[in-house]
Image (cartoon, rainbow, N blue to C red; front, side, top):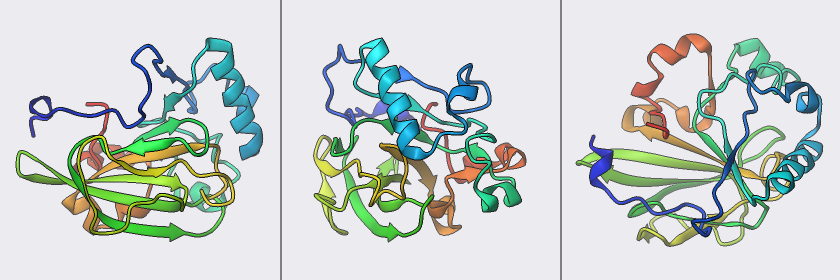
Amino acid sequence: MNLESISINRILNKPLKDKPLYISLGQDCPYLEQFKNLDQKELDNWIQNIHAKHGVSWSISGDRENRVDLYRQNKQIVREGRTVHLGLDIIAAAGTPLYSPIDTEVVHVEYEKGTGNYGWLIVLKCKVDETALYLLFGHLAKNKLAPIGTKLRAGQVFGQIGDFHENGNWFHHTHMQILTTRGFKEGWLHKALCTPKDLATIDECCPSPCY
């Protein structure tokens, strides 16, 4: 796939001068001791304070970060050893609109109930050099969520970042993950994390959005 051959629209319609901050939530973060024991509302406040300190309104975090300490209170994640985060967390205020990065079609909309899950999620299908890719966005709001079958042009709104009561009770962000057809069929739609061992072959199912 030649990603350089396509024009990609901004997912957040922010001014070019409003560049994002990168905030690691993994084991390499120098502030790990400050946030690893916070609940999600406290973590959201911590992140907003970081934004204010650096004069930004949004940040990104996540791809291939090993988040052992952040997830250590989740018994299922600890048991399965899935602590490596797949995809990017795009961190902004609840209600922030999200825009399709390229021409896509909505192929899946779901509410995944339960604390620690996605809440509202959407999957957009696109083609790059005739290869199908699926763009997953989780932790969304029900309001303004585009229905299945909607064909989106690049730059059209498909949803917005959800609040705690509808986003799986997570800090305010959307989880963006790319899936291949194999990854979509094999259930990586509901797996935002993998084990360190999975990293050797994970690109076959979930290519990194940072390449």
